[in-house]
Image 1 (cartoon, rainbow, N blue to C red):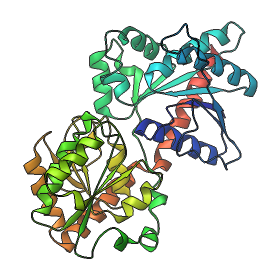
Image 2 (tube, rainbow, N blue to C red):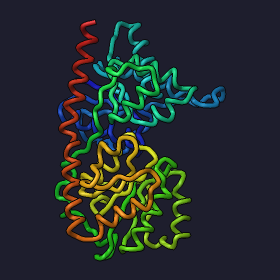
Image 3 (tube, one colour):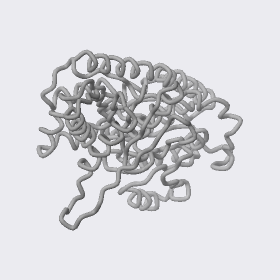
Image 4 (cartoon, rainbow, N blue to C red):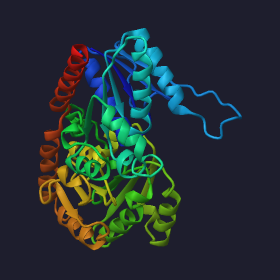
Amino acid sequence: MRIAVVCYPTFGGSGVVATELGIALAKKGHDVHFITYRQPVRLDMLISNIHFHEVSVPEYPLFQYQPYELALSSKLVRIIKKFDIQVLHVHYAIPHAYAGYMAQQMLAQEGIHIPMVTTLHGTDITLVGNHPQYKPAVTFSINQSNAVTSVSQNLKEDTLRLFDISEDKIQVVPNFIDVSKSNDKEVECQRHIMAKPNERIVTHISNFRPVKRIDDVVKIFKGITEQIPAKLMMVGDGPLQNEARKQCKELGIEEQVIFVGNSNEIDKILCFSDLFLLPSERESFGLAALEAMMHGVPVISSNSGGIPEVNKHGFSGFLSDVGNVSDMVTNAIKILKSDTTLSLFKENAKEQAAIFDINKVVPVYEKIYEKVLAEVLQS
């Protein structure tokens, strides 16, 4: 099959999922074309049937904000025609589904009918998409998609609650990880580089935005250090990083906290880790937690959004109410207090993560592609 993928090329979860899915599809023999404004951070261009097409937006003084949707829809038309694309898969309802619909309409004028699959990831629905200025366009784009998937049951329920969309329009297809990437991690892991033998390593990965509750991450770690020697690895970048650094200094733990910034070596970082913190205000799925679990890292998280669908309470980690730092500290200590308990939770985390292996999810997308393609050909 010849598939076009539209996504954000950033370190965020939706871009990672779209990229990993495209790579997996290419490895199964499909011809995959990524169309976005920059090469996705995890895209491996060494695979012969993976292609990247950059969307450039000319700058004109007339526009205060450059019309990316217009440039994207025009680029889609050109690529679909040039490479005879069969299925268009867009990640994020806005602006990608909207641009995809416009491309469909332009192509239809030339007798070309291509189905569009839209995957909803979270903020495109609960934050941006629900804004009064965007809501009508998002509702329209979802309803006009040939198939719609959401990354969690919770996100599906939010979408149905916030938008005028029929329940049978949305199919839940969870995010996924490639479990094979965790193989032989013990051989490659040089844990002593990051911490002393008696120290536990705690990790947080995010875009450092308010929804991630970065201040809670720091408070939880402070609570851990009062009972157990530990280091905290803060991975990622965003508007709250400087505040987090200041908070660490005020709490007297700055020497125990390592700010890594954005990294392409997430697998290596997680191989060092003993515990993962995700106290978010909201997560539509919790991909960062799933990646941690794949590497045998138990998770201390909030119980909001789709996280309970990923992190199994008392098995792969613990769930607490949003903002309940003391409970999260207590649960973290339960896991970290002894090598035996930590080893058990590490094994449990890997077992839970295996449920979301990419080899179980990719065939679901393939069936969706086949279904919408067949429907378009019959119409």
